[in-house]
Image (cartoon, rainbow, N blue to C red):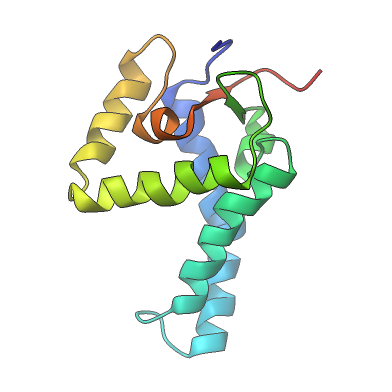
Length: 135
């Protein structure tokens, strides 16, 4: 059951905060490790690990989501885990890549327009983003 869904702007702001607070340092470390901005396997791997592991270990929060008081939750009320976050991040990302970003645009419209604010990667993983704190 979807309760108190977080809207488009809050989700976007949380992603931007994650990019600034976590992504930029990861990119800098990646450059130092690989000596390249373009072919940087380290940055890609670290970002994927962050997107999967941090929410699974931190009750659906990332740094940006925590700062804005939103978190990823399972629709069925269960706890998000590694498998859920893999589906949401990696499989969802592949869908966006395969469709040349068209599915990403559709997802943004879904979050803005749908009452439950769920996007394509939320449907793939059985998740939503909520403003509810843990009990």
